[in-house]
Length: 209
Length: 209
DNA sequence: GTACTTATGTAATAAACGATACAATAATTT
DNA sequence: AAATTATTGTATCGTTTATTACATAAGTAC
Image (cartoon, rainbow over all chains, first blue to last red):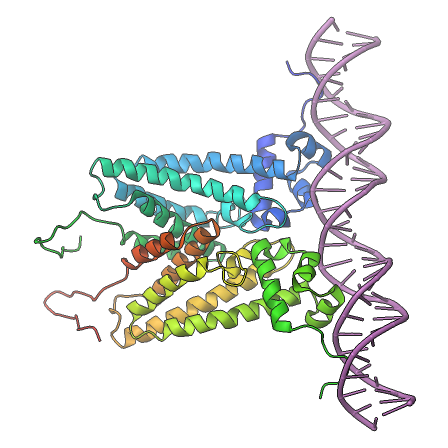
């Protein structure tokens, strides 16, 4: 068994509390004293466990990703590309206003460091966001290969579109938009989703669903 | 005339340089030493002129608004609501990647302080964004009153939708998206724009101006 | 029980932060 | 020319920042 004095706190719990602080105040705005206070530990314990402030933040990011992965897996497993898009945007709308736990509305990947002073945190966050976009793109490539999307559709553009709206939704949530506001935005954005190709010589209008 | 030793620098020039720093590093990430270095003045001059770091930032915001107002006036003066939406989103796409001067891609109203430590900067920025949204909403209310928008259209929801996409575009730009990427996103988002109501038995469509 | 190993709490570290005191300077006003 | 007034450069203020020494505590291994 592991020797030495056992750790007196639960790593996951402290990460959740640190996440809330980073989320609310941003990476730079979150001071070590605020973090240790929220986590209920002293700084030496924090440094022994996470190495540095940046190390703590990366651990928080990893935990955040774990949670988002559950959501993304659910989204990506939808039967059609259109349903993937719908699940993603409506899910993002719900997620953005869900202050479950004590997290502020919005998205950690945006709030914690869209811009930053001395570190490469913004790049790191952009990379995480790009990963989500890549997952969507791949899903849409598959969909097109299976004729679930028209040939004229551009999987990368569709994925980017969804990410753009999703990020916008997070910003709106952080600014105080309501759940219904964001659902409406998501629903409207989905109206732009491509339908089957229409070839020349065929009827160009279609009845609304 | 004004007595005393004259100021040795141009206020507007220094504001532009400070804007770049805030834009790139965020409100908190921008240190006074970095600001004074970029502005080419010493801290006493800065404090004499702007009062404090926050005072400087608000002056920068005001200058930023002046510039955006020119853009918004142009957008709002478009003849139809649909054209307003198109000008706004495509304009946002151009603006977001335009690093004219030395500004980073994106939008100051997002990058400089989506989250922040000790000040109410995020609220202040949200208020500025809300003003833009309100201007759009008002324009769409007028449009609906003039039957330029269907009666079923919700001006507030339309304005919020555009702001959401616009904010998302700014985030994408800050993450390195290309101008063409963003134009494509804007174009796709515009596909969701409402067209004339179709009522049963009555033709409500009208010829475009 | 003694040695070893890891974690904890207190207190302190150097560096950076935003903000000024002060004397010198450069203009207008009388 | 003397008095007044605002700006400038240098150098520094007290705080706060992230990060550690160090002695003590709490476990396992022998």
